[in-house]
Image 1: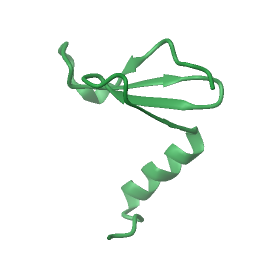
Image 2: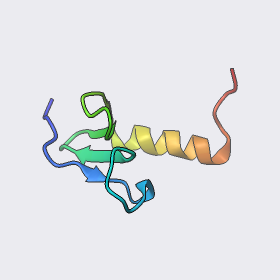
Image 3: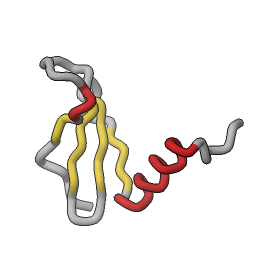
Image 4: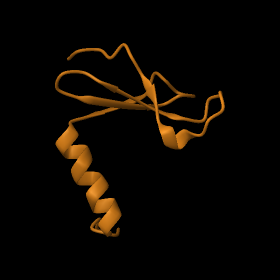
Length: 65
């Protein structure tokens, strides 16, 4: 698996500097997400899987526990 080298800060994280933002990096086959205050912990997924999750969140399609 390729290791991301360029992380981009989310536009929803606010304009100031600091450790309160979500960052995204892309490699040819995967997307990597991390929170800036814990950069060693990353979530790795694919674009279709992330799109499916976001759509389910938007439409309330996630099952409740």
